[in-house]
Amino acid sequence: MKRTLAYTAAFGLILSLYASAQSAAPQVTVLGNSIDIPLSTDTLDTMRLQGVDATTISAQELRLHQNDPLILILGGQNSPEGVGEIVGGILNISEQEELVSSPYARTVQVYPNLWCINQTVVILAGYSKEQTHKAFADSAGDIVRILTQNGTAISLGNETPTTGIHPTLDFSQLKVC
Image 1 (cartoon, helix red, strand yellow):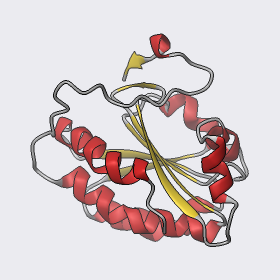
Image 2 (tube, rainbow, N blue to C red):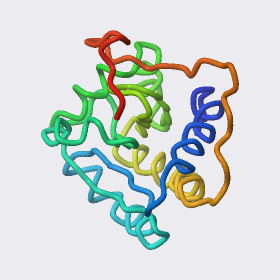
Image 3 (tube, rainbow, N blue to C red):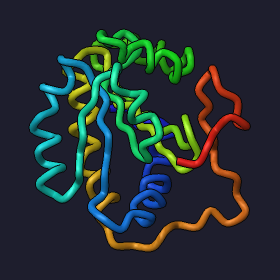
Image 4 (cartoon, rainbow, N blue to C red):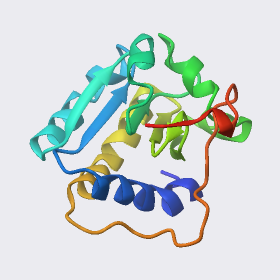
């Protein structure tokens, strides 16, 4: 799996910041369709056994969860049941092209502050349902480890966090989750 710069540079930092801000069991919202969620049942069960409160939702339920602090989206821009439309509005053209470039293509993309400030959205997608499942299964251990560790937050110092903006919003429209 090609781990993108967005993954390697931001994934640990952003999830560490998220984890350190949580006092109760870490929570994650997992958005997927009727194909990707059932394929990921084993990974979700493992996360739950390790103390992560994982809630699964459909694309139609996103409005109710759009302000959740950590959202994992399973599937790429060609996913059915509304997931593809959501992902297609987030991934840029080169990220979309990479996903359809090879039957073995898969990616993990991290977007801080996507729909609101202090939120992280992670897209775990592949060329096929199998590659999407592999992207999630391969990343789940990192996600659980970071969410459940008892460390301190990594300081950003004077750096400005990277902001992923949904194409229909400008930064001034973002609110604090």
